[in-house]
Image (cartoon, helix red, strand yellow):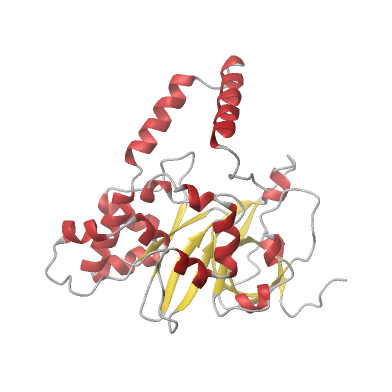
Length: 95
Length: 198
């Protein structure tokens, strides 16, 4: 899987509530963030946990404003997120 | 989701012993091999390692730059590595400054840089710390007795994938005449997590 994002890119996390293991924390679903850097490539845990074939894919450090996660707060939270959890921020939110 | 660490420790320990026994019965693991691997890993895992890195970074500006740019490449300079487990883990060192303070957490389970900080404290694995420090870090730090200057911004690092984090604390004032060993002695585990000043 190609690296779709680079430092400074604006992204939005998936809104999907999956019926299986995932490493996208619930509190960071559907939130806008900024890519800090790519941390390497790892297979998607959502697939591995179900013993499905998973090729390594880019994992990024993505920074969120607390306000965008919780509606308040002046701090930031940085998460490590697989590329499959992210889409460009400009994309229309899926319904 | 990964598990809840708040249950009685005895229950968890019993479950681990039972799983280990089953694995041994079925010939999937050798108990002596498991003990050797654990002993070797834990013998080297200590917050003294994180303290040595910190003291060196305080004294050597070039080392500090290398540590922040690529920690895995800088660790061998002090005879350290993140390779004690099954695979080498990526380490990211995040530096506190006059403008920014960093604190680490793993909200999904209890990821922690054991090689550099030793086994994690019980509170680090508690539901309360994991859920609250991302939501209101300033209040959580205050509960640790650490009232951070309101002008300093907080970055929380949630280790949700394959990277591990360590905080590089600020060098305390009035330590200009201390040598590397004496500086390392000032550094605490909680300072390397970001819930205490050094």
